[in-house]
Amino acid sequence: MKISVVVPVHNETDNVGTLIAEIHQALSTREAYEMLFVDDGSTDDTLLKLKEAMQTFPALRVLRHQNSCGQSRAIYSGVVAAQYDWIATLDGDGQNDPADIPKLIAALSERNSDKLWMLAGHRHQRHDTGWRRFSSKFANAIRQAFLRDQTPDSGCGLKLFRRDKFLALPYFDHIHRFLPAMIIMAGGEVISVKVNHRPRGHGRSKYGTLDRLLAGVVDLLGVIWLRKRHSLPIVSEVR
Image 1 (cartoon, rainbow, N blue to C red):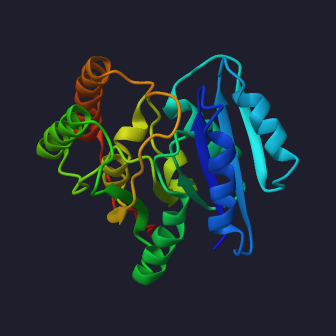
Image 2 (image 1 turned 30 degrees about the vertical axis):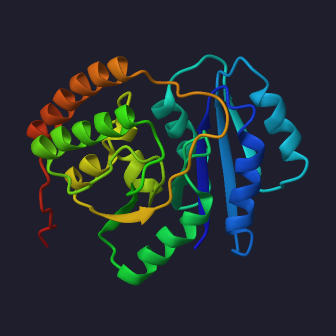
């Protein structure tokens, strides 16, 4: 299976080099793959590090947002530019383990279902602060109560999904946090796969707890509205 790995990054100058090398190591035995790093308006040396890495890793492509547009838009830009039918996404902070990408691919092959459009990583052992783990569990519980997307860790950045199905979804900011629910709404299946989670090696999180909570409430209400306005007809042509 040919695969495009999309990684949104913002001010991750100390993380991108290691992450690129790890993705290459995880996928270098495959017939074809590409890495698309989307620099979302970084103000540090992230872009410089990416340009340097392009000289060593021919599978690496780099896109740049002149201004920061957010993680969801960076992912969307990468998916639009991708050349392969299946997309894997990773967070740019290095906490997702690229070695888990083959695990998702193997799980997809085992199911062999045309309706399986997404495999979502499940960080069953989190390496975050106690407060961040609590807030994540709380948010997942609220989301499950309203959306019932049967995904224990919707916020995990490590996902594998069909490019065409992703691009057919209605785009909105922060959609990356609700992708399983949106895929199910569109008629696809989603399964979760346990994956590794690592401590952040460098830098700091781009999100605060309060602003994530407030944005999450607004986004949840929006997704509920979309679901109520959505229909999935069964269409056949009369001959």
